[in-house]
Amino acid sequence: MKALLLLVIAIATCAAHAQQPTPCLKLSKVKIDRHVLHQQDETMAQLTFKTHGCYVLHGNELPVMTFETKPELDVTLSNTRFAQLDPSSAGTATEKAQEMLVSLKLIASPDLAVGEHTLRGLLTCNVADKSGNVSSETLAIAIPFKVAPHKPYQNVALPDNGRPHQDSAFVHGLKIAGMIVVGIPLFIAMIIWCPISGQCSTC
Image 1 (cartoon, rainbow, N blue to C red):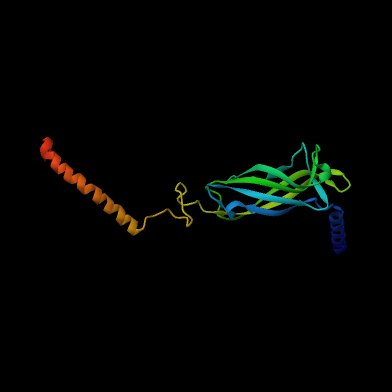
Image 2 (image 1 turned 30 degrees about the horizontal axis):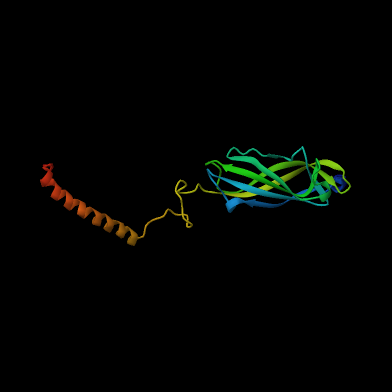
């Protein structure tokens, strides 16, 4: 009897999933600037959403994104753009697009743990099928990103190798030689000027 009950539940679950429509939008690409987010620093995440047999609508109601709360991470929606517009909707109050590009600013606190992270959230937007039927869709998204330790020498302009610039031994020697060349004439001039002016200092 118990086995039969489990079988009925499994069939009902499969039927429920089969009745659910395929989401219009899909997160197809995530790009993190510089490929990493450093502690106590910020970066931009570029999200690319593509449609499948439908359109995402661009009108008075813009897509809404909400994210899980992470005290060590601040997430701000920076920009939303639409691409691959349907020519028939260009210039109308509600344009239809097959691609949506979202820019997020990620700001890490010094306490954000180093390593791999996943930022989870929900995207809610208006979509339309090929027949023009409009509906609201909510899509669960997951944004993977990597956190690296706090940048060393953050306030110093660094060369390509990431280390502060240091003069070579040859350049350092030239600087010392230049100081000697300039200092000797000044020392001789002071020796000559001292008896003439009568302003020689005494110990």
